[in-house]
Length: 434
Image 1 (cartoon, rainbow, N blue to C red):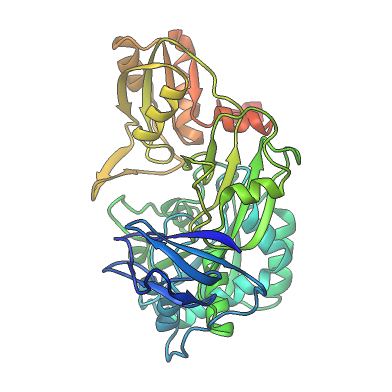
Image 2: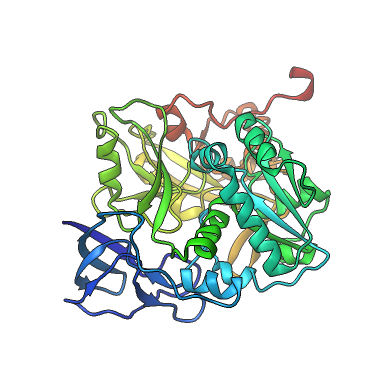
Protein backbone atom coordinates (compact mmCIF):
# COMPACT_ATOMS: atom_id res chain seq x y z
CA UNK A 1 0.00 0.00 0.00
CA UNK A 2 1.16 3.55 -0.77
CA UNK A 3 -0.11 7.06 -0.12
CA UNK A 4 -1.86 8.90 -2.97
CA UNK A 5 -2.76 12.56 -2.57
CA UNK A 6 -5.53 13.59 -4.96
CA UNK A 7 -5.98 17.38 -5.18
CA UNK A 8 -9.53 18.75 -5.12
CA UNK A 9 -8.66 21.40 -7.70
CA UNK A 10 -7.37 19.94 -10.96
CA UNK A 11 -9.28 22.24 -13.26
CA UNK A 12 -10.39 25.79 -13.90
CA UNK A 13 -12.85 26.90 -11.23
CA UNK A 14 -13.33 26.28 -7.53
CA UNK A 15 -12.08 23.14 -5.75
CA UNK A 16 -14.38 20.15 -5.86
CA UNK A 17 -16.34 19.03 -2.79
CA UNK A 18 -15.47 15.63 -1.36
CA UNK A 19 -18.29 13.07 -1.47
CA UNK A 20 -16.45 10.59 0.77
CA UNK A 21 -15.42 10.59 4.41
CA UNK A 22 -12.31 9.62 6.34
CA UNK A 23 -12.31 5.89 6.87
CA UNK A 24 -14.30 5.07 3.72
CA UNK A 25 -13.07 2.27 1.47
CA UNK A 26 -12.99 3.33 -2.18
CA UNK A 27 -12.37 1.58 -5.48
CA UNK A 28 -10.27 2.68 -8.42
CA UNK A 29 -12.53 4.74 -10.68
CA UNK A 30 -15.04 5.63 -7.97
CA UNK A 31 -16.15 9.26 -7.92
CA UNK A 32 -14.87 10.89 -4.72
CA UNK A 33 -15.57 14.60 -5.35
CA UNK A 34 -18.11 16.66 -7.27
CA UNK A 35 -17.61 20.09 -8.87
CA UNK A 36 -18.61 23.19 -6.97
CA UNK A 37 -19.78 25.29 -9.91
CA UNK A 38 -17.33 25.35 -12.83
CA UNK A 39 -15.20 22.23 -12.58
CA UNK A 40 -15.04 18.48 -13.19
CA UNK A 41 -15.69 15.32 -11.20
CA UNK A 42 -12.72 13.70 -9.48
CA UNK A 43 -12.34 9.94 -9.21
CA UNK A 44 -10.04 7.76 -7.13
CA UNK A 45 -7.11 6.40 -9.10
CA UNK A 46 -6.52 3.58 -6.61
CA UNK A 47 -8.43 1.15 -4.43
CA UNK A 48 -7.91 1.74 -0.75
CA UNK A 49 -8.91 3.68 2.36
CA UNK A 50 -9.48 7.42 2.80
CA UNK A 51 -7.09 8.46 5.57
CA UNK A 52 -7.40 12.26 5.37
CA UNK A 53 -9.46 15.00 3.74
CA UNK A 54 -8.32 18.63 3.70
CA UNK A 55 -9.47 21.73 1.84
CA UNK A 56 -6.83 20.94 -0.78
CA UNK A 57 -6.84 17.19 -1.23
CA UNK A 58 -8.11 13.70 -0.45
CA UNK A 59 -5.43 11.29 0.79
CA UNK A 60 -5.85 7.60 0.08
CA UNK A 61 -3.78 4.68 1.29
CA UNK A 62 -4.16 2.22 -1.54
CA UNK A 63 -2.77 0.50 -4.60
CA UNK A 64 -3.40 -0.32 -8.25
CA UNK A 65 -3.41 -4.07 -8.80
CA UNK A 66 -4.69 -3.98 -12.37
CA UNK A 67 -4.87 -0.74 -14.40
CA UNK A 68 -7.68 -2.18 -16.49
CA UNK A 69 -9.80 -2.79 -13.39
CA UNK A 70 -11.81 0.28 -12.43
CA UNK A 71 -15.34 1.41 -11.66
CA UNK A 72 -16.87 2.47 -14.96
CA UNK A 73 -18.86 5.66 -15.32
CA UNK A 74 -22.58 5.26 -15.89
CA UNK A 75 -23.85 4.83 -19.43
CA UNK A 76 -24.92 8.18 -20.88
CA UNK A 77 -27.04 9.33 -23.76
CA UNK A 78 -24.69 12.04 -25.05
CA UNK A 79 -20.98 12.62 -25.49
CA UNK A 80 -21.31 15.80 -23.43
CA UNK A 81 -22.70 13.80 -20.51
CA UNK A 82 -19.97 11.16 -20.90
CA UNK A 83 -17.25 13.84 -20.70
CA UNK A 84 -18.89 15.29 -17.59
CA UNK A 85 -19.23 11.94 -15.82
CA UNK A 86 -15.62 11.03 -16.69
CA UNK A 87 -14.27 14.31 -15.28
CA UNK A 88 -12.40 15.19 -18.47
CA UNK A 89 -10.51 18.50 -18.48
CA UNK A 90 -7.89 20.07 -20.72
CA UNK A 91 -4.88 17.82 -20.16
CA UNK A 92 -2.48 20.32 -21.72
CA UNK A 93 -2.37 22.40 -18.54
CA UNK A 94 -5.35 24.72 -18.83
CA UNK A 95 -7.76 22.33 -17.13
CA UNK A 96 -10.92 23.73 -18.71
CA UNK A 97 -13.83 21.28 -18.33
CA UNK A 98 -14.20 19.44 -21.62
CA UNK A 99 -17.96 18.87 -21.42
CA UNK A 100 -18.50 22.63 -21.71
CA UNK A 101 -16.54 22.82 -24.96
CA UNK A 102 -18.44 19.84 -26.32
CA UNK A 103 -21.74 21.69 -25.84
CA UNK A 104 -20.77 24.07 -28.66
CA UNK A 105 -22.67 23.69 -31.92
CA UNK A 106 -20.58 24.55 -34.99
CA UNK A 107 -22.22 22.90 -38.02
CA UNK A 108 -19.97 24.97 -40.29
CA UNK A 109 -16.94 24.86 -37.99
CA UNK A 110 -13.90 22.87 -36.94
CA UNK A 111 -12.51 20.74 -34.14
CA UNK A 112 -8.77 21.35 -33.79
CA UNK A 113 -6.60 18.80 -31.99
CA UNK A 114 -3.80 20.75 -30.33
CA UNK A 115 -0.91 18.31 -30.73
CA UNK A 116 1.74 21.02 -30.94
CA UNK A 117 3.33 20.07 -27.58
CA UNK A 118 4.83 23.52 -27.53
CA UNK A 119 6.96 23.16 -24.40
CA UNK A 120 10.47 21.79 -25.08
CA UNK A 121 11.56 18.63 -23.21
CA UNK A 122 7.97 17.41 -22.85
CA UNK A 123 7.24 14.73 -25.45
CA UNK A 124 4.54 12.41 -24.11
CA UNK A 125 1.92 13.84 -26.50
CA UNK A 126 4.15 13.21 -29.52
CA UNK A 127 5.03 9.72 -28.31
CA UNK A 128 1.31 8.93 -27.99
CA UNK A 129 0.74 10.05 -31.58
CA UNK A 130 3.68 7.97 -32.80
CA UNK A 131 2.51 4.83 -31.01
CA UNK A 132 -1.29 5.16 -30.92
CA UNK A 133 -2.58 7.86 -33.28
CA UNK A 134 -5.99 6.15 -33.56
CA UNK A 135 -6.97 7.00 -29.98
CA UNK A 136 -6.61 10.74 -30.72
CA UNK A 137 -8.25 10.51 -34.16
CA UNK A 138 -11.25 8.73 -32.63
CA UNK A 139 -11.44 11.48 -30.01
CA UNK A 140 -11.53 14.13 -32.72
CA UNK A 141 -14.44 12.37 -34.40
CA UNK A 142 -16.33 12.06 -31.10
CA UNK A 143 -15.80 15.79 -30.56
CA UNK A 144 -16.95 16.48 -34.13
CA UNK A 145 -20.06 14.38 -33.52
CA UNK A 146 -20.87 16.29 -30.34
CA UNK A 147 -20.30 19.75 -31.82
CA UNK A 148 -21.66 18.86 -35.29
CA UNK A 149 -18.40 20.13 -36.81
CA UNK A 150 -17.86 18.68 -40.30
CA UNK A 151 -14.08 19.14 -40.31
CA UNK A 152 -11.19 18.34 -37.98
CA UNK A 153 -7.59 19.53 -38.00
CA UNK A 154 -4.59 18.12 -36.19
CA UNK A 155 -2.12 20.93 -35.40
CA UNK A 156 1.42 19.60 -34.97
CA UNK A 157 4.93 20.98 -35.44
CA UNK A 158 6.41 20.00 -38.81
CA UNK A 159 9.57 18.72 -37.11
CA UNK A 160 7.67 15.73 -35.63
CA UNK A 161 8.02 13.65 -38.77
CA UNK A 162 7.37 10.23 -37.25
CA UNK A 163 4.19 11.36 -35.50
CA UNK A 164 2.95 13.03 -38.69
CA UNK A 165 3.55 9.83 -40.67
CA UNK A 166 1.64 7.81 -38.05
CA UNK A 167 -1.28 10.24 -38.14
CA UNK A 168 -1.50 10.35 -41.93
CA UNK A 169 -1.30 6.57 -42.12
CA UNK A 170 -4.11 6.22 -39.57
CA UNK A 171 -6.30 8.84 -41.32
CA UNK A 172 -5.78 7.17 -44.70
CA UNK A 173 -8.02 8.46 -47.48
CA UNK A 174 -10.49 10.15 -45.14
CA UNK A 175 -11.14 13.82 -45.89
CA UNK A 176 -12.85 14.87 -42.66
CA UNK A 177 -9.57 15.21 -40.70
CA UNK A 178 -6.47 16.98 -41.97
CA UNK A 179 -2.96 17.30 -40.51
CA UNK A 180 -1.65 20.88 -40.36
CA UNK A 181 2.12 21.22 -39.96
CA UNK A 182 3.22 24.29 -37.97
CA UNK A 183 6.46 26.17 -37.38
CA UNK A 184 8.79 25.22 -34.53
CA UNK A 185 8.60 28.17 -32.18
CA UNK A 186 7.12 29.04 -28.80
CA UNK A 187 4.17 29.63 -28.19
CA UNK A 188 2.84 27.93 -31.31
CA UNK A 189 0.57 25.81 -29.11
CA UNK A 190 -1.46 28.79 -27.89
CA UNK A 191 -5.03 28.48 -29.19
CA UNK A 192 -5.12 31.81 -31.02
CA UNK A 193 -1.68 31.15 -32.53
CA UNK A 194 -2.90 27.82 -33.90
CA UNK A 195 -6.02 29.41 -35.38
CA UNK A 196 -3.86 32.12 -36.98
CA UNK A 197 -1.51 29.52 -38.50
CA UNK A 198 -4.37 27.50 -39.95
CA UNK A 199 -6.75 30.24 -41.06
CA UNK A 200 -4.55 33.36 -41.23
CA UNK A 201 -6.82 35.19 -38.79
CA UNK A 202 -5.99 36.71 -35.40
CA UNK A 203 -8.64 36.56 -32.73
CA UNK A 204 -8.48 39.40 -30.23
CA UNK A 205 -7.41 38.48 -26.67
CA UNK A 206 -11.04 38.81 -25.56
CA UNK A 207 -12.30 36.38 -28.19
CA UNK A 208 -12.58 32.64 -27.67
CA UNK A 209 -11.91 30.06 -30.41
CA UNK A 210 -15.66 29.53 -30.83
CA UNK A 211 -15.77 33.00 -32.44
CA UNK A 212 -13.67 31.52 -35.24
CA UNK A 213 -16.09 28.56 -35.35
CA UNK A 214 -13.43 26.41 -33.70
CA UNK A 215 -13.22 24.12 -30.69
CA UNK A 216 -9.59 23.47 -29.72
CA UNK A 217 -8.73 20.44 -27.58
CA UNK A 218 -5.42 18.94 -26.46
CA UNK A 219 -4.46 15.59 -28.00
CA UNK A 220 -4.37 13.79 -24.64
CA UNK A 221 -7.76 15.27 -23.77
CA UNK A 222 -9.17 13.71 -26.94
CA UNK A 223 -7.56 10.38 -26.02
CA UNK A 224 -9.34 10.60 -22.65
CA UNK A 225 -12.60 11.27 -24.51
CA UNK A 226 -12.09 8.09 -26.52
CA UNK A 227 -11.43 6.10 -23.35
CA UNK A 228 -14.57 7.52 -21.75
CA UNK A 229 -16.84 6.86 -24.75
CA UNK A 230 -15.55 3.39 -25.60
CA UNK A 231 -14.44 2.03 -22.21
CA UNK A 232 -16.50 4.17 -19.80
CA UNK A 233 -13.21 5.12 -18.14
CA UNK A 234 -13.00 8.22 -15.94
CA UNK A 235 -9.84 10.34 -15.89
CA UNK A 236 -7.80 8.48 -13.29
CA UNK A 237 -4.46 8.25 -15.10
CA UNK A 238 -2.15 10.79 -16.74
CA UNK A 239 0.64 10.73 -19.32
CA UNK A 240 3.67 12.69 -18.13
CA UNK A 241 7.28 13.46 -19.07
CA UNK A 242 10.03 13.38 -16.45
CA UNK A 243 13.46 14.75 -17.29
CA UNK A 244 16.42 16.82 -16.25
CA UNK A 245 19.24 16.14 -13.79
CA UNK A 246 18.58 12.43 -13.35
CA UNK A 247 20.85 9.44 -12.90
CA UNK A 248 19.21 7.84 -15.93
CA UNK A 249 20.64 10.62 -18.11
CA UNK A 250 19.43 13.78 -19.80
CA UNK A 251 16.96 12.10 -22.14
CA UNK A 252 13.32 12.70 -21.23
CA UNK A 253 11.38 9.77 -19.78
CA UNK A 254 7.77 9.25 -20.85
CA UNK A 255 5.35 7.58 -18.44
CA UNK A 256 1.98 6.58 -19.88
CA UNK A 257 -1.16 6.34 -17.73
CA UNK A 258 0.28 7.07 -14.29
CA UNK A 259 -2.38 6.98 -11.53
CA UNK A 260 -3.38 10.52 -10.50
CA UNK A 261 -2.10 11.32 -7.03
CA UNK A 262 1.19 9.46 -7.57
CA UNK A 263 4.06 11.35 -5.87
CA UNK A 264 6.32 13.02 -8.44
CA UNK A 265 9.29 11.79 -6.41
CA UNK A 266 8.25 8.19 -7.15
CA UNK A 267 8.62 8.86 -10.88
CA UNK A 268 11.97 10.58 -10.33
CA UNK A 269 13.15 7.52 -8.41
CA UNK A 270 12.02 5.29 -11.28
CA UNK A 271 14.48 7.29 -13.38
CA UNK A 272 17.27 6.42 -10.95
CA UNK A 273 16.82 9.45 -8.72
CA UNK A 274 18.37 12.92 -8.84
CA UNK A 275 21.97 13.15 -9.97
CA UNK A 276 23.67 15.18 -7.22
CA UNK A 277 22.73 18.72 -6.21
CA UNK A 278 19.79 20.31 -7.97
CA UNK A 279 18.11 23.69 -8.26
CA UNK A 280 14.38 23.06 -8.40
CA UNK A 281 11.77 20.62 -9.66
CA UNK A 282 9.67 22.36 -12.28
CA UNK A 283 6.14 20.98 -12.54
CA UNK A 284 4.96 21.55 -16.09
CA UNK A 285 7.04 22.76 -19.01
CA UNK A 286 10.06 25.10 -19.08
CA UNK A 287 8.06 28.19 -20.12
CA UNK A 288 4.89 27.94 -18.05
CA UNK A 289 5.80 25.47 -15.30
CA UNK A 290 6.06 26.33 -11.62
CA UNK A 291 8.56 25.29 -8.99
CA UNK A 292 7.20 22.31 -7.06
CA UNK A 293 8.05 20.62 -3.79
CA UNK A 294 9.83 17.35 -4.44
CA UNK A 295 8.29 15.84 -1.33
CA UNK A 296 4.65 16.90 -1.83
CA UNK A 297 4.08 17.38 -5.59
CA UNK A 298 1.83 14.76 -7.19
CA UNK A 299 0.55 13.85 -10.63
CA UNK A 300 -2.72 15.62 -11.51
CA UNK A 301 -5.04 15.69 -14.52
CA UNK A 302 -3.10 18.69 -15.86
CA UNK A 303 0.51 17.72 -15.00
CA UNK A 304 2.54 18.05 -18.17
CA UNK A 305 5.94 17.20 -16.79
CA UNK A 306 8.45 17.21 -13.97
CA UNK A 307 11.90 18.60 -14.71
CA UNK A 308 14.78 18.48 -12.22
CA UNK A 309 17.17 21.37 -12.88
CA UNK A 310 20.75 22.28 -12.15
CA UNK A 311 21.27 24.99 -9.49
CA UNK A 312 20.25 28.45 -10.69
CA UNK A 313 22.90 31.02 -11.59
CA UNK A 314 23.63 33.68 -8.98
CA UNK A 315 23.64 37.46 -9.50
CA UNK A 316 23.95 39.45 -6.30
CA UNK A 317 22.82 42.74 -7.76
CA UNK A 318 19.89 44.81 -9.08
CA UNK A 319 17.75 43.04 -11.67
CA UNK A 320 14.75 44.05 -13.76
CA UNK A 321 11.86 41.79 -14.75
CA UNK A 322 10.24 41.81 -18.19
CA UNK A 323 6.94 39.93 -17.99
CA UNK A 324 5.42 38.26 -21.05
CA UNK A 325 1.88 36.84 -21.28
CA UNK A 326 3.20 33.75 -23.08
CA UNK A 327 5.65 32.63 -20.39
CA UNK A 328 6.26 32.95 -16.66
CA UNK A 329 4.14 35.47 -14.77
CA UNK A 330 5.58 38.07 -12.39
CA UNK A 331 5.34 35.82 -9.33
CA UNK A 332 7.36 33.09 -11.08
CA UNK A 333 9.98 35.62 -12.21
CA UNK A 334 10.26 36.95 -8.65
CA UNK A 335 10.66 33.37 -7.42
CA UNK A 336 13.53 32.81 -9.85
CA UNK A 337 15.14 36.18 -9.01
CA UNK A 338 15.05 35.31 -5.31
CA UNK A 339 16.71 31.95 -6.00
CA UNK A 340 19.36 33.82 -8.01
CA UNK A 341 19.95 36.03 -4.94
CA UNK A 342 19.09 39.10 -7.02
CA UNK A 343 17.33 42.30 -5.92
CA UNK A 344 14.32 43.17 -8.08
CA UNK A 345 14.44 46.93 -8.70
CA UNK A 346 11.94 47.29 -11.54
CA UNK A 347 9.20 45.39 -13.38
CA UNK A 348 7.66 46.04 -16.77
CA UNK A 349 5.40 44.15 -19.16
CA UNK A 350 5.77 43.21 -22.79
CA UNK A 351 4.04 45.92 -24.84
CA UNK A 352 1.82 43.24 -26.40
CA UNK A 353 0.14 42.41 -23.08
CA UNK A 354 -3.49 43.23 -22.44
CA UNK A 355 -5.44 42.23 -19.35
CA UNK A 356 -8.54 40.11 -19.95
CA UNK A 357 -10.68 39.03 -17.02
CA UNK A 358 -7.77 39.51 -14.64
CA UNK A 359 -5.32 37.50 -16.77
CA UNK A 360 -2.47 38.71 -18.98
CA UNK A 361 -3.06 37.93 -22.66
CA UNK A 362 -0.86 38.54 -25.69
CA UNK A 363 -2.28 40.45 -28.65
CA UNK A 364 -0.57 38.21 -31.22
CA UNK A 365 1.19 35.20 -29.59
CA UNK A 366 4.49 34.41 -31.27
CA UNK A 367 4.36 37.56 -33.43
CA UNK A 368 5.72 40.26 -31.22
CA UNK A 369 6.70 43.96 -31.27
CA UNK A 370 10.01 45.53 -30.25
CA UNK A 371 11.00 45.64 -26.58
CA UNK A 372 13.32 48.67 -26.60
CA UNK A 373 11.03 50.78 -24.38
CA UNK A 374 10.75 48.03 -21.78
CA UNK A 375 14.49 47.42 -21.63
CA UNK A 376 15.18 51.18 -21.38
CA UNK A 377 12.63 51.47 -18.53
CA UNK A 378 14.36 48.70 -16.57
CA UNK A 379 17.80 50.25 -17.14
CA UNK A 380 16.61 53.72 -16.07
CA UNK A 381 15.31 52.21 -12.84
CA UNK A 382 18.68 50.77 -11.91
CA UNK A 383 18.63 47.25 -13.36
CA UNK A 384 22.12 45.99 -14.21
CA UNK A 385 20.70 42.82 -15.71
CA UNK A 386 17.23 41.71 -16.79
CA UNK A 387 15.27 38.51 -16.37
CA UNK A 388 12.74 37.85 -19.11
CA UNK A 389 9.96 35.33 -19.71
CA UNK A 390 9.34 36.11 -23.36
CA UNK A 391 8.25 33.89 -26.23
CA UNK A 392 10.63 33.14 -29.09
CA UNK A 393 9.91 36.29 -31.09
CA UNK A 394 9.79 38.69 -28.12
CA UNK A 395 13.10 37.29 -26.87
CA UNK A 396 14.49 37.93 -30.33
CA UNK A 397 13.57 41.61 -30.04
CA UNK A 398 15.07 41.84 -26.52
CA UNK A 399 18.35 40.33 -27.73
CA UNK A 400 18.45 42.80 -30.61
CA UNK A 401 18.55 45.75 -28.19
CA UNK A 402 19.56 44.85 -24.61
CA UNK A 403 23.19 43.83 -25.34
CA UNK A 404 23.67 47.11 -27.23
CA UNK A 405 22.60 48.93 -24.04
CA UNK A 406 25.09 46.95 -21.98
CA UNK A 407 22.36 44.93 -20.24
CA UNK A 408 23.01 41.19 -19.91
CA UNK A 409 19.91 39.02 -20.27
CA UNK A 410 18.71 35.94 -18.41
CA UNK A 411 15.75 33.98 -19.68
CA UNK A 412 13.72 32.23 -17.01
CA UNK A 413 14.17 28.92 -18.87
CA UNK A 414 17.99 29.12 -18.94
CA UNK A 415 18.71 26.84 -15.98
CA UNK A 416 16.18 24.31 -17.29
CA UNK A 417 17.58 24.21 -20.81
CA UNK A 418 21.19 24.13 -19.60
CA UNK A 419 20.29 21.04 -17.58
CA UNK A 420 19.49 19.04 -20.71
CA UNK A 421 21.83 20.83 -23.16
CA UNK A 422 18.90 22.37 -25.01
CA UNK A 423 19.45 25.50 -27.09
CA UNK A 424 18.78 28.60 -24.98
CA UNK A 425 15.92 31.00 -25.79
CA UNK A 426 17.84 33.82 -27.42
CA UNK A 427 18.06 35.65 -30.73
CA UNK A 428 16.30 33.91 -33.59
CA UNK A 429 18.25 33.60 -36.86
CA UNK A 430 17.27 36.23 -39.40
CA UNK A 431 16.08 35.08 -42.82
CA UNK A 432 19.41 35.93 -44.45
CA UNK A 433 21.24 33.93 -41.75
CA UNK A 434 19.23 30.74 -42.31
